[in-house]
Length: 93
Image (cartoon, rainbow, N blue to C red; front, side):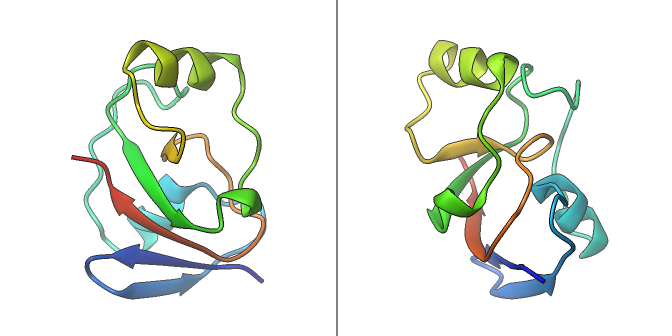
């Protein structure tokens, strides 16, 4: 089962494959603001510090959101990015 580590807290959780970053954060009581939970509102960006290859591919809404908000390529929306291997993340400020 994959591990997701939240920085700067240094908190790691073991999750089932397919769990979103948002679901993992909620299970650890890490506050994440979200509005739509479809990947296009832009309220829950996370920087993927390592393991970006272990996330689901972004779908159209998320790709458009990332482009419109000029997020760097290692930023994903927590509500739709699902974990398939070990990753390390941090909230995007």
